[in-house]
Length: 86
Image (cartoon, rainbow, N blue to C red; front, side, top):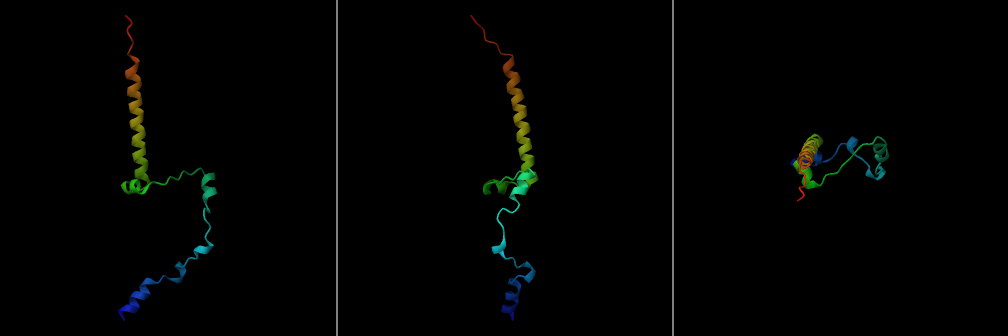
């Protein structure tokens, strides 16, 4: 009796049976390009660090803010220096 129950549990319902031979590769690709959607595929080791797209966006925004602040520091610190001629 146990064997029959396990077999029934493993089978998919008929409404979930999908014929992949009729699938179209890249079906929505042109639409994504037209809508100017940016899709970025992360490497598996990087994807493990981030839980979702909002975490990736937050990290990238903080990196952008950091680069902006360091650019301001390097620009302003170099302006006051003048070379002395002897």
